[in-house]
Image (cartoon, rainbow, N blue to C red; front, side, top):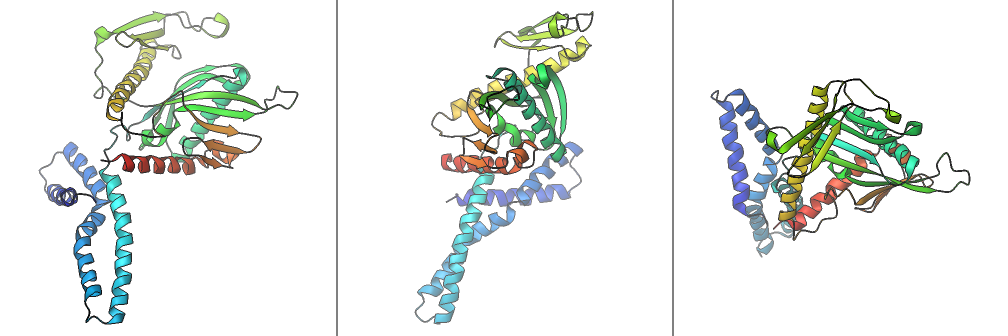
Length: 357
């Protein structure tokens, strides 16, 4: 049972916000913040009121059932209502518990996605390219904005590494479950014996950190500039436009050379570095909080094998929730992605409820 006071606090907060928003004393920024909070509470307010009235309604129905003078027909109706009330109560309680779960402050942020070819040589780089195309299609479908930050190509149209930012609504909360090792099983075009090869690519999804999220002291940074180099050692341009930024306390380093402008390369490099440092700090805090918490998903461990794409069998399997979809082509086209993500979010919520103390 959720403490009654917690639910009453929600109802009182909703009422207070309603009064505050009807006054004209709020500035634009505060009005927007309170409007968002009020909108979130609006989604749960009916359930909160029903939860409070549950005990009194239950007592009334039980009185009828225990009253020896009550008519049998009325008792049957009361019993049906009580069963329905108990069933509704379970659903309402679960919805309220989910609402009361601690919120991840990063869930509403934009994201930076990093895809790198892993084991498997050329085939791994081709698979990394396939994954990037899949996320591009998902962005197009959801009307998200994908902006390329850096890209390193291999032969035959493959990708050694690609980093991009994705902007839209609740990006990180949707894509954070993509972090980990993605494995592919298929017959490469270069395979003459028809043998199935296994390759892999790693995906890292970071919440895009803003300056307000993390303060980086200039004294903690070492910035080196150098001449950008293209394939085979050829010079991309004749100025020292490439930038390497090293965060001295952690040793994290980011190199950026895609732009011809040193200033633009530095700005892109700082965006990546800030997000990596922000994620590093989030992971440290999360590990302290979750020493006694057991969870299968949402860890964001990049070394964890999370999903297998099996082409001969036309299936994609997520190993964290043991879900297999025989819709590989649709999944890579971004069509069945939602089904997988909804299952992952549901499992994460279930685990959070179990760990709720």
